[in-house]
Amino acid sequence: MQLSFRTLSTFTSFLCFLLALVWGLIPDGLLSTWSIEYSLAVGVVARRSAVLFAALGVMFYLVRNEPPSITRHALSNGFMVGCWGLAVLGFGEWLNGHAGPGILLAVVVELALGLAFFQAKRVSVELETVG
Image 1: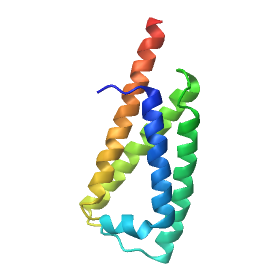
Image 2: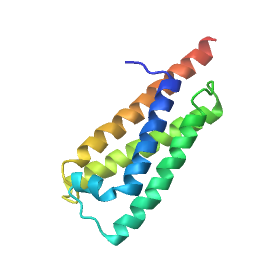
Image 3: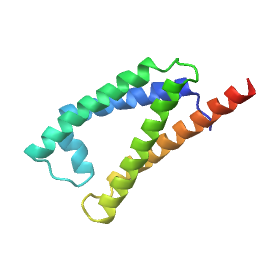
Image 4: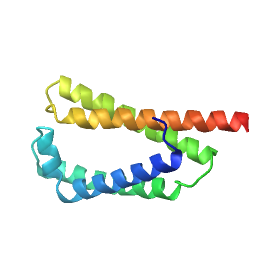
């Protein structure tokens, strides 16, 4: 399935805003699906992560109509690195027994989002060379 950058960016902004709400308001709920105990320190990191997700949501929402450009490629590349890095870390934490199997859902979503942005970037580069 081939997604346009606009659709992918809009979906990603929605997902980031949702994650910002969850990490900001009920991090213990998400952590429990990963079999990770909530603590004061984890709460601080979760709330800070919520703000980062909100910032990503704003960025992806604002660039959703951007034509292929250096800015769009930079955002896509950075997000791919972030998604794939989080997927590798999540899988490693699961393998090492630091997180339960619930983290594998996050890993799958991160891999899929990274691949979707890779595909959207590849398609836009092909269109640039044809056009």
